[in-house]
Amino acid sequence: MVSLVLAFALPAARADDIPAPPFSVASETGRLTLSEHKGKVVYLDFWASWCSPCRSSFKWLNEAQERFGPQGLVVIAVNLDQDKEAARQFLKENPAHFKIGFDPEGGVAKSYQVRGMPSSYLIDRNGRLRSSHVGFRKKDKPALEEEIKKLIAEAQ
Image 1 (cartoon, rainbow, N blue to C red):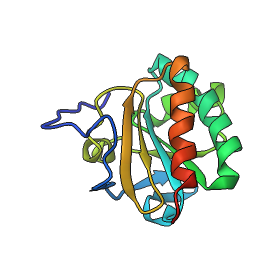
Image 2 (image 1 turned 45 degrees about the horizontal axis):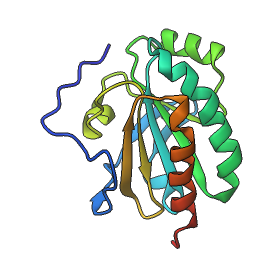
Image 3 (image 1 turned 135 degrees about the vertical axis):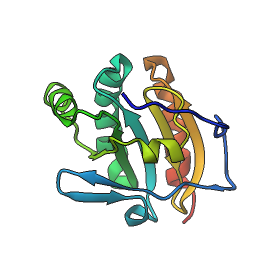
Image 4 (image 1 turned 60 degrees about the horizontal axis):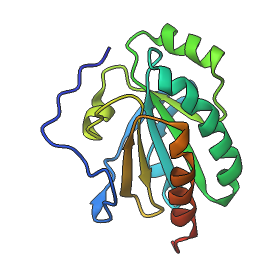
């Protein structure tokens, strides 16, 4: 498990003036970077194989990617397991229809100041961090979807 010590936390609400930290993580097909998705709304999710709420979130992340992808949403889920086989097993049980990256050393998670599992960050088309969320509860889905719709609707 990755140990995360945070000196300060990113805002849990709007953070319009904060550029999202750039990242590059390994994927099954090469590298995933934030910069390659400029002009898109990015839902960045950090997860681990041992995280029960992460299992619930994957179904919704698939739905969000399918529903909002054609309008400009890109879902990127970054795994923090040091044991890549544990992550692969999780993905067999919880298939992902969105981009998956791997950050076993936790460097990207540290730059985003991840406070719990799962943690998610909404990044606007201009690469600005707009909100962050810790945990996943089904009752939060409508509010998350409204945030996504709002960012998609904003002019580039």
